[in-house]
Length: 217
Image (cartoon, rainbow, N blue to C red):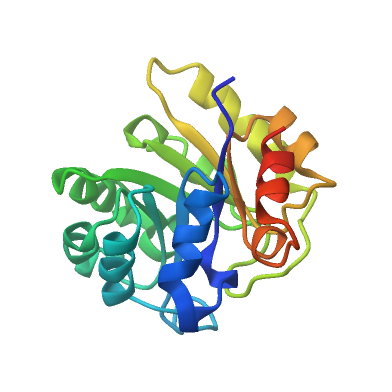
């Protein structure tokens, strides 16, 4: 099992002081900064875009994990890469038959790529592109808003993806996003996830370092 990495989602941060918030993540032991990009079309919420990623890049050397919850992500891949993304993940539901081409486009920019599926999308829909990926992201809530409850049926999908990844001769992260807490993280990790996205759990914690350490442990 790969080392567990904690990727707090800045969706739960205070947007009025985002620079300080990402600096606090590194100071408190986070491994990755998870950036939820939403366009109000693919999901029913709007967050931030390329400029935010560009400005975050100036304030942290942690990897920026840009999760594009947008329609036509291929139009923006190169700009997110140029802004400083280290990994760009795109939804099967947004790309459909075009997913392989979008992943290859991401790779062509020199950035790591990942495929994402929603809780109601079968793993089979992305099985053929997993060998291309550096990361597979499984949503354990329906995307759009932070603070939702973990959907337990996604545990089986984590196991499915982990089995596929372990059968390949490639380092591929299995990331889980949505409703992760100190109470369910052990089971999530045991199922095979090694990158844990946590928003509210980290940003609302009285002691962020203690929360990040407990999620890792």
